[in-house]
Amino acid sequence: MINILRLVPVIFLSAAMVGCSPNAGNSIAESEQNEPVKPVPISSNPTQAIVDKVINGYGGVAFAELETFTIKSDLRYGWLGQGQYADYTDLEPMRKLYHFDLKKGWGSEEAWGGGGSYAERIFTTDEGQYTVNFLNKTWELDEEADLYQHFGGEIRTLDVLLAYDLMKHRETAEMKGSMMFRGVRHDLVTYDMPGTSVDPEVWINSESGHISKMRRPIPDYAVISYVFGNHTSADGITYADDFELYFDDKLIEYAKSVKLNVGGVIDSIWQVNGAIQPKPETNTSEEMVVDHISGPVYYAGQGAGWGAFVDAGDYIIGIGAYGNISERFAAFQTSQDIKKPLRYLVATHHHSDHLEGVPQALELGAKIIAPEMARSNLEEAIDRPLGAKEFLFLTENTESFGPVKLYLISTGHAPEYLLPYVESERIIIDEDHYGAQIADRASWVSTNMMTLISEVQRLGLQPEYLINTHGRKVEKWSDIMSMAEQHIPGLCPTGREICRDLIK
Ligand SMILES: [Zn+2]
Image (cartoon, rainbow, N blue to C red; front, side):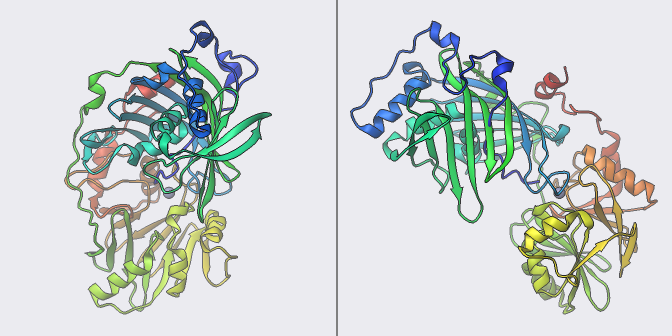
C-alpha cells in the first residue's frame, strides 16, 4: 500500500472525552484563561492583521517563539481504494507520535497502524530524511529530502503546525474573502506552502484566530478538506483536539484525540534507534528492466512497479495490473524477442493501486481475470461499465490458464484474492503480502503474509520461490518460512511504546 493519503485528520467526538467547554470550536481552554496570552501587535495591513490574529489565537508571543513540542495523535485512518472491501473505506487505528524543533526546522513522526503491519519512524534534520523501519529493522537516509517531502502532509493535518507555517510564509499570504462556517465569520487566506503546487485555502475564525478548515482542490483528483475543531491549549499553546479529513465527500481519517506538550524533545530523537541496521542494498532498478526468472516466467518493471509475464506457448499471460503495463509488456517483447499477444492479465485483488494498468491491458487486447470483489474498482479504473467479453471473474476455487494455476483464496490482505502459481517452476507471484525488497536477506513476515502461507499450506502447494510485484527480488520460499518462524503475533510486534500504550 502506498500511503498517498497521509494528509489530514478531523475531530468530532472528543469534546465530551476531554471535558472541554460545550462551545467546541471557538473556545479557549481553561488553562489558557489562567495564563493570559501575551499578544503580538496587530499589523495595519488587513491580510497581515489576520496572520497576527492567528498567531494570537495560537498563543501570541509564546507561539511565535515556540521551539520544541510533541504531539500524540490517536487516529482512525482509511486507505482510499485499498481497504479490506471494495464497497467502502474502513477506518483502522493509526497512532502517531511527533517531535518538532521549529527553530531548527526538524520533525520526527513515529507511526503505528494497520493492526501492527505498519511501524516506522521518519525524521528530517539538516542531513536529510531518515526512515526507520522497525519491522524490517532497517534505516536509510535520503539526503535530497527536505522537511516538506514527508512533513508537508503532516503539517496540513495539524492546525498548530499549519498556523506556524502560515506565520513563517506570511509575506505570501493573500485574502480570498470571508464566509460563515459553523455560525461564525471566517476569513479565507491562501499562502505559498513549500513542497506543494496546490496551495491551501485556510479558513480562519474571525473572532478567535483559530483555523477551522483548510481546502486543497487537487486537479483531476479530489477536493481535500481538512477540518479542525475543539481548540484547546497546553503550556500556553492552542491546538485543535478534533480533526477530520475528507476526499470530496468521503471521510477518510479522523482524530479520536490529539495531545500537545511543549518541550520533551531530547537529542536522541534525531538519531537512529531501536536495534536497527542500515538498509541493505535493494536490487530494484530505476530503469525498466526485464528478468528471465525460470522456464516460461519473466519479470519486468522498475522502481516499485513490477509484473510477471508467463509464456503460454501461443500467447502471454500477464500477472499484476500495476500501472504502466504497456511499457512493461513492450520491454518484455523487445528484450526477449517474443512477439506473442497478451491474452490474459491477472488482477489479483481489488485494490485500486493494482488496477491502474487495466485500461492499457485492454488496449493491448487482453482479457482481465479478477476476483468478483474487484468489479466496482475495475469499473472505476476504466471509467465506464465493464464489457462482458473484457473480463473474466473467477468463481471456481482453482482454474488453469496455460502454465499458470489461479487459486481463489481469502487472506488478511484481501478477502477475495487470486493466487497465481506456476507449478512447473514452483513460483508464487505475490501482490502486497510480502515485501521482498532487501537484497541479501529475507524481509519481515507480516500477519497478512502468515495468512497467505496458511492458504498455500492448505492447498498443498510446494513453492520454491516467490516474486512480488512491488520489488525485483526473487525470494526463496524456505527463507520466507524461516522468517515466518520468527513472526510475532498480535498488535505490537515491535514492542515500541506507541503500540504498547494502546494495548494497556
Ligand atoms: Zn493490496
